[in-house]
Image: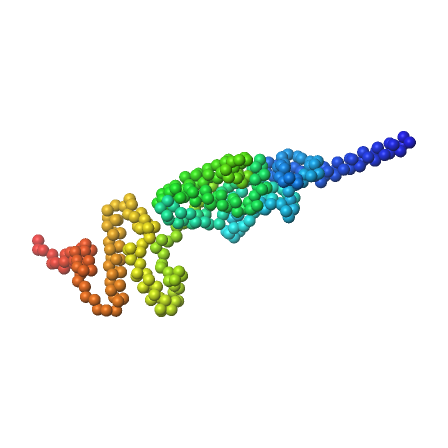
Length: 327
């Protein structure tokens, strides 16, 4: 009897040890400073693991598999120079990368304080925050939320400055954008606060921008006429271009012209005004010639009378034609 009892106890102990060993082998996870795991149960997110952990609760499991949230972001592809998606959660093992990463959203438009459009390429260094992974778990499209937050921060900072101030304020814009991103995390990391944290630590930011040509070639019907267009298209495009007079300039174009005169010496300003004056006279002459009628105008009616350029040319011509005076 004693022998049977001993064997039964030994069998139970062996089974318990086997179960414990199975749990240790299959439910043991080691989280490091640069890697962690999220767990959940039937109520949703439960915790982010830290250190060496065995999941003794059978209802608790690591977030992984096809139902795991898509934690990914847009990054630069060094091989092609384009963009690619980087996954921060391994769907097979459930491992989550906590190392700093660089998010590079697709180029986006922003508007300055004086309504100039600029095309922005931003780079933001970030890493997932182990303490706030609950928010990462709850966000349906992490990559889209991250891109939107970055674009919003840069648009807000660029919108505070005029286009002529933007070039000298690159570092100020970068500092302002990263401060906005950090503030959004702090203001949405607890229940009852406005907004929602992304569960991210933002480290650094940088950006570059380009401006579209405000004086781009005119279009016909919204599309630029190609060089091989029909003669009728070319004539229509030229007529449309000639119709764009001074009053057709948009406020942004006038602002760019005003910027061209800022900080220039009187000689440079005079040269620019002379070029604009000559271009205006050329437009007048072409418009008159395009009418197909004989038009007779005096120099005074064309505004050529008393022009400084003509007076200077006439003075030089007379000076070169006069014989040198005898000593």
